[in-house]
Image (cartoon, rainbow, N blue to C red; front, side, top):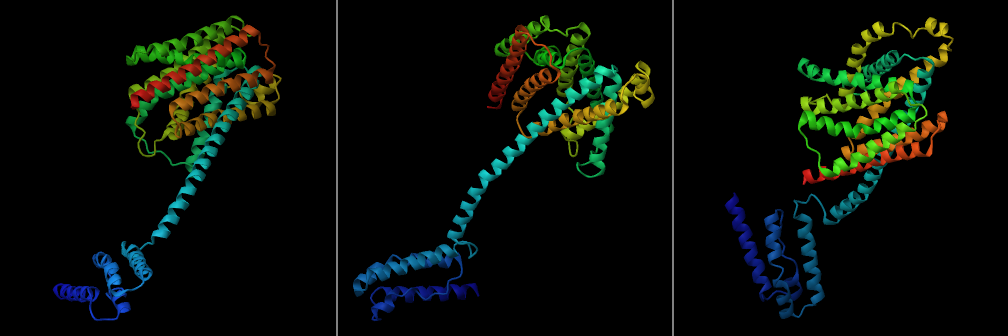
Amino acid sequence: MAMATAMSMSGTVRLTTARLHGSPLHPVAALAPPRLHLTSSSDIRLRSSLLPLLPSCAAKSGANPRRSGAIRASASSSGAASSDGGQADAGTGGLEAAQAGVGVPEKKLAETLQLGVLFGLWYMFNICFNIYNKQVLKVFPYPITITSLQFAVGGVIAAMTWLTGLHRKPEISAAQLQLILPLAVVHTLGNLFTNMSLGRVAVSFTHTIKAMEPFFSVLLSALFLGEVPNPLVVASLVPIVGGVALASLTEASFNWAGFLSAMASNVTFQSRNVLSKKFMVKKEGSLDNINLFSIITIMSFFLLLPVTYFAEGVKFTPQALTAAGLDVKVVATRALIAGLCFHSYQQVSYMILAKVSPVTHSVGNCVKRVIVIVTSVLFFRTPVSTVNGLGTGLALAGVFAYSRVKGKKGDKKSK
């Protein structure tokens, strides 16, 4: 069957060629496109190979060259239309490509707007947490109880997201839980020390001290991971340490308990980062950053619950609050809002980290600290001297420089 088809096509081609090379047929008939029933791509190539013969035939017969050009254009467009098996037209493909090109900027704009909303929520939740948390700690000086309540609120939020299907429930093994346990311990201590500091000194001063996190990150990484910092990283730490020292010397609310608690918070939080690198918890399958944070929050609650009972007793009850002369509704509402914002700002932080580079996240965190300091100073009317403000600004500038230096170092490694 295939051989018969080939012989038929060969005969047809010879007949067409004879017509084109001076057969006694009418000139117009000689210029007509070959009457072949072409269906395959090989037939199209065969037809296209005959097109160069048309001008010479037209010249011999005296036919109009425009007619020949029209025939050539017709045959060429026919071949282009059939080159993909008749599935797509060149013009349609160009239109689709143009439409796709128009959609790219719109997609990028949507992603940028989404990222802007996440950064706004991150800053807003952090500001609200620090304000409401400070208001509660000023009248209810039990930081261990407050920290336990915040972990409890976070655990409830995590459980609700899993039960309602808002986020996929994690599938975790016992081996992974063992690796997560040290992270939960330092996470618990870090947040506890932060609340202890916030209860003792001004919010702005606590966050000024916490600007020294890069210093402890470099120190602990060198001690436990053997990472030697380059000179630019070390140089960026100088204004951080100097700025914190300058702010501490002129801080009106300074006391050693608040200062050392904030320093301890720096050590524990940076220990968490070092432990994350050392133990390398594998975030496989459903164990993403959000689920990892949720599991750490729940574990932190159960770790701190017995400590709360033995260290401070059961203090957050309507009877105990009333006996202390506090408005139960006001304190409970503020504590609840602080707990909601505490979990929300950290969860949004993880969501941002999944969309941007660690350097961008670090710069955003530096900006967040500036906003929190300025907002708390204005809200609580914290007295700030010129030297104190200069020290805070110097420390934050050092944090920004550190982030940029680390970013350039990461770029060189990637290359």
